[in-house]
Image (cartoon, rainbow, N blue to C red):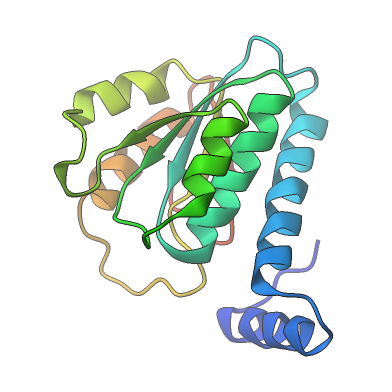
Length: 169
């Protein structure tokens, strides 16, 4: 795997689009590749609990797509939407149809406390970190900051963390 800067990634994405690949195709390819990488590294997914932490933008979409594939391949997947996403967000519906559960804590959409998110994370076998993308700017604020603290604490525990674009924990 080659590591590139945010600027280089934007250039690669722009070049891909000039070659005829749409942003939608790039996201679908990324989501499938992320899920495939996780499955390859974790083995059979049946019975494994996955918590996907979904940020904003294309990175969050990559995370939702990966979540759907993991659910279709046998994992029990809960995707947690941390910040408001563009409406209508077709990725949400696709992910639900693929068998993923969604919890949307953005702007208080669901009555879900950080303690219940912490409980989900604590019981997860796999955490998919789709919080920070190539457009991230500091400082990081809540709700991301609180969830990132949980990821750091759990990183040394049983859960295997797979980060998309930028590791946040």
